[in-house]
Length: 611
Ligand SMILES: *[C@@H]1O[C@H](CO)[C@@H](O)[C@H](O)[C@H]1NC(C)=O
Ligand SMILES: *[C@@H]1O[C@H](CO)[C@@H](O)[C@H](O)[C@H]1NC(C)=O
Ligand SMILES: *[C@@H]1O[C@H](CO)[C@@H](O)[C@H](O)[C@H]1NC(C)=O
Ligand SMILES: *[C@@H]1O[C@H](CO)[C@@H](O)[C@H](O)[C@H]1NC(C)=O
Ligand SMILES: *[C@@H]1O[C@H](CO)[C@@H](O)[C@H](O)[C@H]1NC(C)=O
Image (cartoon, rainbow, N blue to C red; front, side):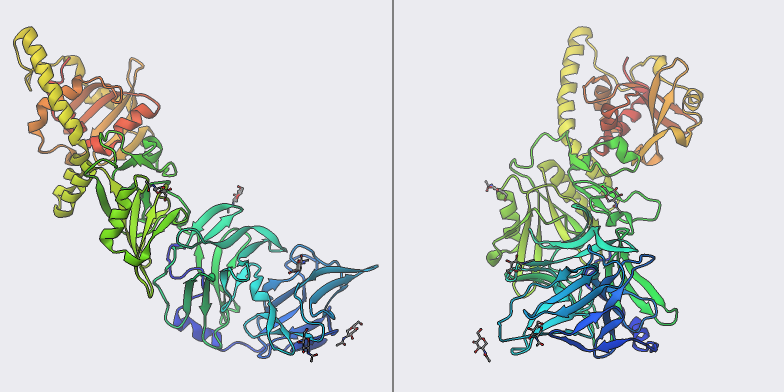
C-alpha cells in the first residue's frame, strides 16, 4: 500500500483498459443456463446462472486440485476459471449433490442431498408472505435477491465479499445496516475456506484500511481522506456518519480488474491480459520494507532509499532505542526520546518540528480536534495544551476545510510518500526546537547545528564543570589545565595494534556506522575487548575552541559514558579506542548522534588526553 494510489479500491491506467475491451468470446456449453432464479427453481450441478452480458456465471465448481464442490461466481468468458465469490466457503459439498433454490420465504438456500437433505448455506432475509423473491446475477458480478413487488434488493453478494473486491463493491462499514464488509483470504488455492489474511477498515481516529494476518497488521493504507482520484477510475473513500467505505467505479465494459487478498498474505490488484490469456499483477502489497506496518518501530520514519540502504530514521528529538540493533539495520525497536535532554517536552518553550511529506502515522489512536475552528495555529495550540499530545497534522477535509489530527500515543508507521503525504508536526523540547529552527536556514552548516543543538545542555554542564576543575586543580597545584599538556604515552595506540585487533578492519568486526564514521570491535593482544571508533574526515573539523571542554569529557567518568582508553592518530587514520561493553551502555554512547560532536571533540584533543 505504499504507492497510496487509492490502493484498496480498484484503479488502473487508462491505456491498459483497452486490453480489456476485446475479450475472446469462448464458446460455452452448459446443461442449463438462465438469467434469473425464481421461487422454487433450482440450480444443480452443471446448471449456471449467467449475467445478462455473459460476463459472470454462478454455479458449482471445485477449486484447484480439490474435488470438493462449492457454489461460486466466476468470470464467464475467461478460460482460466477465476472465482470471485463463494457461498459455502467453510462447508464444502462432497460429490454432486448440491442444489440451490429460492424457498417460499424468499431466501436463497443451498442444500446437499445425500441420504437426507441438509442445509449448507442460506441467506437470511424476511419478505412479506404475499411477496416473492427472485435472484439475478448482474454483469458486475453481484448476485442480488430482489423482492418482486417492490423491486427492492433485499440481499446482495457484494455485502458478503469473500477474498475479492470487484469494481462497484464497497469495502467498509455500514452503520445503518450494522455490516462490515471486508475481504478474507482463502486458506489455500484448493480451499476457499476463511483464511488468516484480511483487509478491513479500522474506523477509529481517521479511518484506515489494514491488511491483517489474524489480528496483526501487515500493512496499512494511508488514512482518510485520500487525495488521489485516478482519472478514468474513480475510487472514493467515504466517511460520513452512516458509512465508511472505499469503492471504486469503472466505466461500462471495464470489468476485468479485481483486488484480491491471496492466501499467501498479499494484497494484489490483477488485470486480465487478453494477449497472454492470463491475469497480470498490476500492483501488490506489501512489497517494500516500508510497506510493512511499523517496519522502523515507533517514533521513526521509513524511507525507501536505494535498495541497499537502511531506510529508518528517528523523528526529531528521538534516538534509536537500541542503537546496536539499529546499527545492524534492524529498526523494529524504534526510537525513544533522547535521554540527554534536560527539559521535558512539556516545559515552557517546547514546540514542533515539521516532518514533511509523510504518510501520517497510524491514526487509530489519534483524535480529531473540533473541526469547526481548526486552523494551523489552532492545531498547534490544541496539541500544546495537552502534555500527552506527541504530534499533530493539519488535514484538508473535502468540503469542510481544515481539521487537526492529534496523536496521544506512539507514532507508528510513518513513511515518506509523494502522493498521500502530509506534514507531521512532532513535539520536541526547546533544545531540539532551537536546533531545528536553525537547521531550516543553513545548507551545509545545518547538519552540524542539528548535532550541536541537543548538546547545548551538556556543554553548559561541562563548561561549569571545567570551571570547577580549574578551581580545584589551581588550588592544588597552582596550574591550569593546558590543551597541550602532557599525556601518557600509553594512551596512544599504534595503527598496527589497531589493525591487528580488528583483523584489518574486517567487515565482520564492524559494529555499525554513523555520521562520524564506523565502529569496530577489536581484541587487543592482552585479551581486552575494545570498541574502536574510526572517524571519517568530515567528523574532524573546526572545533579547536572546544578543547578545554573536551579535556573535561575525557576526565568525566559519567555512568552513561563509556570509558575512553586512548586514541590513534597515524597515517591519516584517526581513531578513538573505548572499552567494549557488549550491551546497551556501549550502544547508547557510541552510536548516539547527538554525541558525535563530543566524539569529534574528544578526537581533536587526542594528544592532550589527561591521565
Ligand atoms: C414453492 O414450493 C412450495 C412448497 O412446495 C409451495 O408451497 C409454493 O407454492 C411454491 N411456490 C411457487 C411460487 O411455486
Ligand atoms: C436471521 O435474522 C434474524 C433477524 O434478523 C436473526 O434473529 C437470526 O439469528 C438470523 N439467523 C441466522 C441463521 O443468521
Ligand atoms: C402484502 O402484504 C402487505 C403487508 O404484509 C400488505 O400491506 C399488502 O397490501 C399486501 N399486498 C397484497 C397484494 O396482498
Ligand atoms: C502470519 O502469522 C503467523 C503466526 O503469527 C506467522 O507464522 C506467519 O508467518 C505470518 N504470515 C505472514 C505472511 O505474515
Ligand atoms: C489529553 O488528551 C488525552 C487523550 O485525548 C485525554 O485523555 C486527556 O484527558 C487530556 N488531558 C488534558 C489535561 O486535557
